[in-house]
Image 1 (cartoon, rainbow, N blue to C red):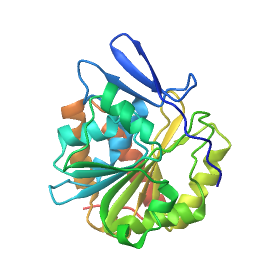
Image 2 (cartoon, helix red, strand yellow):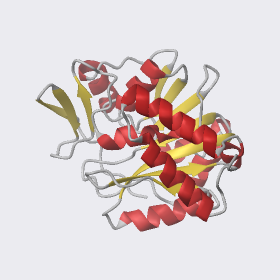
Image 3 (cartoon, rainbow, N blue to C red):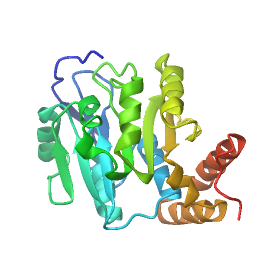
Image 4 (cartoon, rainbow, N blue to C red):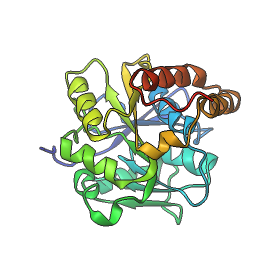
Length: 256
C-alpha cells in the first residue's frame, strides 16, 4: 500500500454549503452552514443505511475511518447516543474540521491520528465496535487508499459479533470490483450494495453473523419507516435492495 504525502486541506463555499478539498477540485466533505448536522452529500446519507439493522444505544461504540469534513460524526452525535472513534491519518484535517466545520473532539467523539490500515490490525481494537464506517480517499480520489485483503479482514475483526461495516466505493472506477470481491472474502459473502448515488458512489454493507441473526425483514422495514419519516431518506429502497441481495445469497434475515 502506498500513501501520498499529507494533503493540505482547503475550503470553498457555495449556496450556504462549505466544502472541504485536499488541494484539488474533488470534494472531500461538506457542511450546510445553517444545519451542520444535515448530511449534504447523497453518499453520506446512504452510509446511514446501517440504521436499517442496528438500533443504537449509549453503550455502543462506532468507528469512523476518515474524518473528511466530520459530517458523519456530527450526524451521529446529533441523532444517536453512541460514542465515535475516528481514525484520521492527517492532523491537518482534524485542525480544519475544528476551525471550519464545527467539530470538537469530546468524550463522545475522539480522533486517533494513525493509518487506518495499522489501526484495524491492533488487537486491542478487535471486537470493540458495533458499526464501522469507512470513507478513505486522498486528494486524487482514485479509489480507496486502503483496499487490501489484510485491511478488510482487520475491519471485520474490529467489529462486535453483531456488528456491520459500511464502505464508500466508486462504482464506475476500476477499483470497485477488486474492493467488492475483497470485502466479500473478508465477510464470507454477507454483503449488500445499495443502488448507486447520482455521483456514482456505491455504498457497501458487510455483516458479522450476529448482525443478521438479530434482524428480521419486518424489523429492517420498520427501521426504514423511521429513516424515511425522520429524515426523508429513500430508506425503503435501501431496505428492499439489501433484503433481496441477502436473500439471494442465502444470508437474509428471517422473513418473519
